[in-house]
Image 1 (cartoon, one colour):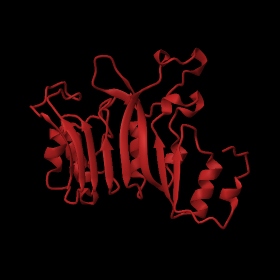
Image 2 (cartoon, rainbow, N blue to C red; image 1 turned 180 degrees about the horizontal axis):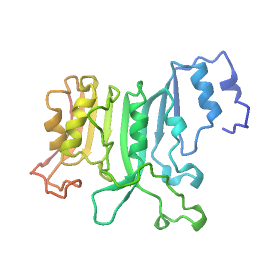
Image 3 (cartoon, rainbow, N blue to C red; image 1 turned 90 degrees about the vertical axis):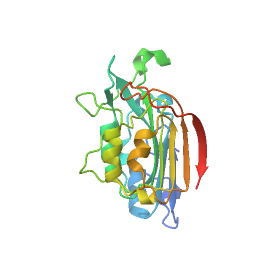
Length: 241
């Protein structure tokens, strides 16, 4: 959809359109005038954003589209977060600080799929002039997670997926703080991917009281955040409660 500066497509310009759900599943940034028109004309619409192909976008579109993600209409976010690992360290430069601000500032967010991906590099086949410069939002490396603090307040999610390929660090401290930062009684669907789930399960025990679907694959493995081998888990299951 091509949009010239100062104009809007007829479907968006029409005052007769009644919009309840808007989906943006693309690697290109949505024009700001389109976002503004959606917000002013349909303030009760639900915005679903999916971008799991950022590495395939043009160089100018690889950085996080903060304007789109900061929309008050944001209801569902399925997103890849770029990171760069420090050699030999379990700390990272990443976009999680920026994403954390977006999530905490989105009171209507109910669906969150957290995924990570190493920053684009030459080995992925980019030409020299196309290698994007990812704008990190932190001055020093940090854990590869939302790094929640006790004073933070997450929106009451209904669906949550935490990817482990590459890993999102569900450390014991992160899970402990997260357990107090959100109303877990609203959660209906939880996907922990393939990981050592004991930190999450121990801290959230008794809090996820209305869960209907639980998906995880747990097995003997190493906790990426600490390097410590986990206790023996050896099952893979999908449970509908």
